[in-house]
Image (cartoon, rainbow, N blue to C red; front, side, top):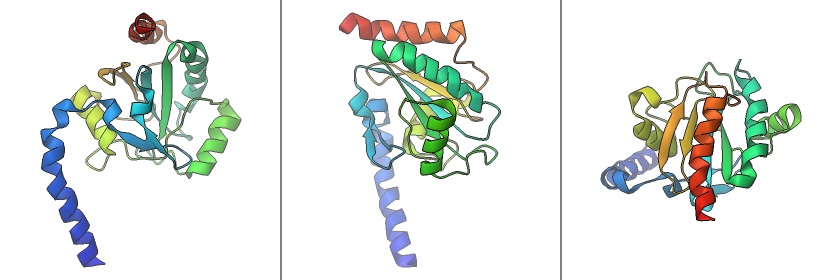
Length: 189
């Protein structure tokens, strides 16, 4: 077991410089995450759509943001927006459930219809590589500090901006940012 683990770690470390060298050429479409059902979710499948990535939790005071997020989905999905909820237990242990229970909770309590990812780490050195890339794009102030942190990505997979947990998805300012990002999608259709 120890030998196998050291080989795995050595292999990861050996590939790290290649990742670091190509970081400038990466965009969101370079990553694949897992859907809440465990199937691969290549973000390249969302080329041509604006992405709103939100780390979520079921037992947080911000959990009520599922309602306005679902409203955004209903309003803007036909125009080219895809919201992806990313459950995480990184902050306050507020997402202790497994994927099946999370899926039942968000559909039952909030009628969520937008895609949900599998539960993942979103903060710190052990964050999923996609979230490491997002944090790098956002800079030190833009890394997730709590649940319902939001990232907006353009239709070409490029980082646009980040929004803290305090940003209400129903706020006019936030919706104007989404609409501005969607203009490039509408223009290309």
